[in-house]
Length: 111
Length: 115
Image 1 (cartoon, rainbow over the protein chains, first blue to last red):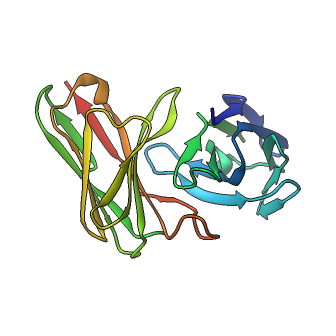
Image 2: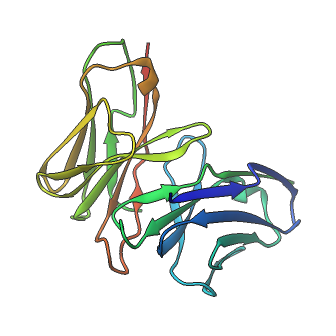
């Protein structure tokens, strides 16, 4: 069964304290893995798409990496404005018109 | 930002009443999706559409129906709302599936409360 597990559920960081969020997945043939950011009361905002193991993408203080079983979202020197819930989703090759989402990691960065 | 709007943004209704949520896009994307988001469950797919009048079920489709008569509009209907359908509903669009442009973009959401 295709599934996505994100950890931790919640993470508190001090401003400038780097850390990583984890997305573990089980899927029969990965087509794509997606990271989103969601602010309270808003829809998910697209961050990255990763397609194959070893691939990395960066955007400002965020860097996403992918292995055959998991993805990490590394946050370097976070700022309070990085506080949000980060969602991970996978797309399977055999049913590529369906996407499976994790429950998210709620990040709180304190000044 | 992708041109996606949802209406209404908030709705309170009573058990047993019909409810229709609307998603409108200005991107001319082929694929449209309805999700619900509940604490501890993440986003779960209700229905999706791969073209005008072409729709299919997702993992939590019971109690919901959809229609797409125009490329830009995707309607989600709760025929007889129940309290278990209290949730936040998100519409998403993607340009294609099976290619490099299959990233989904989400609307702002509709918060539905069924009393």
